[in-house]
Image 1 (cartoon, rainbow over the protein chains, first blue to last red):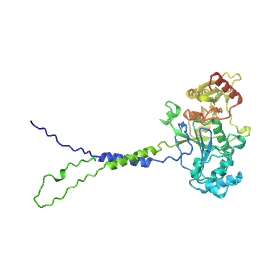
Image 2 (image 1 turned 90 degrees about the horizontal axis):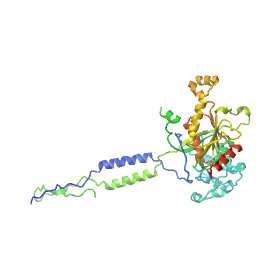
Image 3 (image 1 turned 120 degrees about the vertical axis):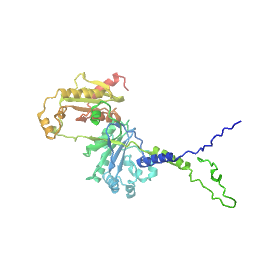
Length: 215
Length: 205
């Protein structure tokens, strides 16, 4: 009986192109990745057709969550000392009686959403403890006691003459009165220009904007 | 793992007794662990990547003014008032609200675009030459057609039941339809009453 000799083929595959591609993709992702900043408050922003990319800059981020709570977060990358100034200013203008250590602690407070009467207690905590606190939000809805006005006033004072943005990041389900109260707080401080943070979506087909963009 | 030792290193050439054969080592490196690691990193970076960077929408609010002469004047014929109600409902009327509320209509976010487009067309169609504006446009080197819709103003009045998404959506609608003049104002009691009445009759909770 004749034997058919099967050629012994190696099971080895050349992996080099595969590795090439894998590392190409890897390097792309390493370069393109900007890590998600930790989100102390979960917010789903609405979509909008506006395509301006948010620029990094000193800014006061006002977050409105779905339960109509208001939080602030001051981004002072260029000069951390401004944060002390703001905390000091709030301390004097509202006579909160903060200790120097508590004022210094304002720097590392990621997000502040407590009424003034709880601020002392909140700032006394360490960063890890602050994260566990269920913050009540800054009271804004009462027109006579809109505490955000004071915060904006201090931030405005500390950053006067510099480029400083006011960013509003609202959740889809935030009720309008809260948003209105925030705008009123800014308006009281003569700030009429601010940015709403949104997610991007394309212009609907056939509309004027669509035609303009696709000229 | 990936390369199976086929034992091809020492076949054949025997040079005689006593000659020490140099062992031929394969130049191949087993790449599998490297690939494993590579893909692990890719997965990690894909998951942590924030691809869609947030965009912003600029909002400029007018200054509150006490003086009558500083207030922006709005021609009734070119005004469109939009109210935002519960459950993404939109209410609107053109010009002035008639006392019996006959021109008070309701729609939703899909329908409001057509309303805005139609109103804009109407305003442009009934344009009476405005020499002052046209002269200004020419001076700045802009087409005269920029003046056609100067009378067109959209007034946005969100109710307390409107949410933030509705507000952003309607502001977006202004950008989409290129409405140059719009304002956000507090709703009046009459309008609020009409909205509530319509909501009740429509069974909107």
